[in-house]
Image 1 (cartoon, one colour):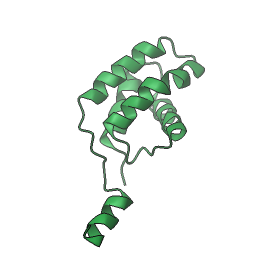
Image 2 (cartoon, helix red, strand yellow):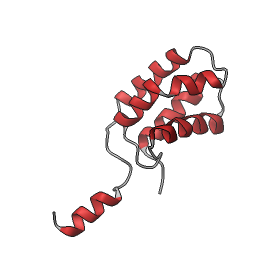
Image 3 (cartoon, one colour):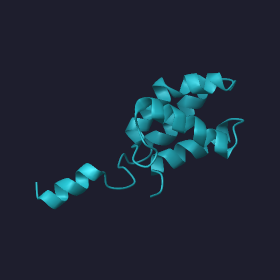
Image 4 (cartoon, one colour):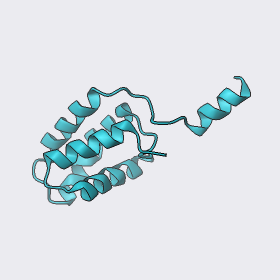
Length: 101
């Protein structure tokens, strides 16, 4: 299963807006998601927006990235334009559909 559209968009935006390369940008966002208990495959734009606002600035600071708040504002704008649907169905949605509820 591929990562969510929100995850991909945030990683691309972070890579383009900072000195982080592709691997470092993806890893940094993955670590912030892990702290929040979220998965890159199913995270929505709204959920990732909260992670970007609350957790990502500290991750960026830990990596010596200048201006983490400005970067997070840029990422939040990117995420605001996305639909907040997950990339794939969650297990709960599948079981609910199969159960007829």
